[in-house]
Image (tube, rainbow, N blue to C red; front, side, top):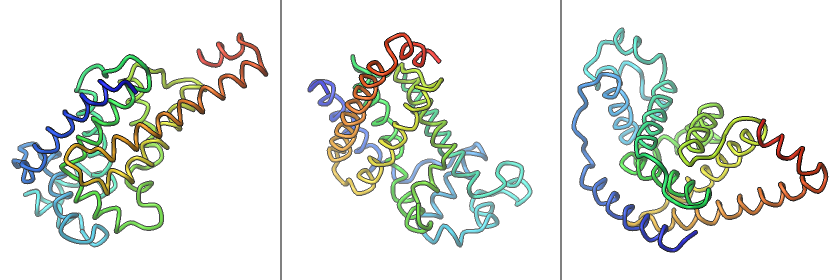
Length: 230
């Protein structure tokens, strides 16, 4: 990754981390759907996620149980809505910065971790409380693939077709591996997270180049180009 790109991202991350720390208690949303998400995450930071009931979330959100039912049918649905809200925040940041696909993916995924920063305590609590594969539970297979497909779009990379689906899966693996580092990263500039993400993206890029080279040798350039366009 270009040194300038990473240095710029480091300074932005430090500034946003500072803002997140100062905004530990966000203003209560006037939108009921957003308020439910905020209250559910607040409750998760205070007590066991598995034991939190929908009735408790409704009460904390100043909604009746029927009103909550009209918005979300389960705690899983609330988490899905939270993930979509993070997607919108990342995509709202405009075109990704960077000359290479790897640099643009780095920029997009760091935006995602920055958007998650204010909710880290809640997410840590949920993950600790959720079974054998907590990251899989939180991100969800289909939910994660949809998010990663949009992250590819934000980086100007095609996420459809056979090759696109492989990219989505590869980016999901990079994201989950980096998320484990992010959860334990207490640095103000998110330096550990950035280093881990950069390392994993480089590995993924090398693997993708190797696979492309092997495919060209086996099938020829025409077939590989056709697969990329699929």
